[in-house]
Image 1 (cartoon, one colour):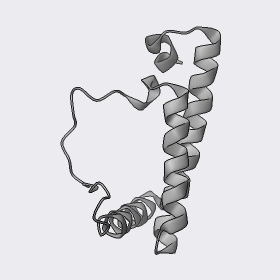
Image 2 (cartoon, rainbow, N blue to C red):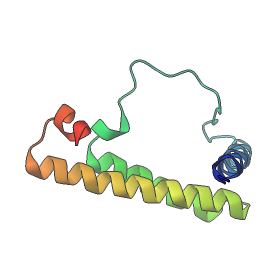
Image 3 (cartoon, rainbow, N blue to C red):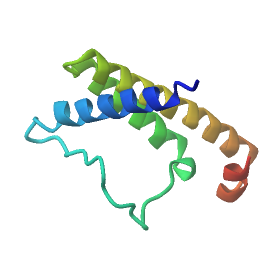
Length: 105
């Protein structure tokens, strides 16, 4: 029996909690759980490592001010994923791979 549906439901609930937590600040951007994909958006795997690391720092900062443990966990998990992606991107940049080559690896 798979626990994946339960885990996905818990992550979705934590994401909703994080959205509600941070949408209450007047100058904070609102998080939408069902926004349409933007065709002009740059894929995370194609962003420079410095921007990925900056996002990780921002997510860690948000985690320190989160009002619930679940929101803190989600934000810290996202930050760790951004750090991992930044490290992968740095390797691609060091090897001189193009964006397409880096994504294929």
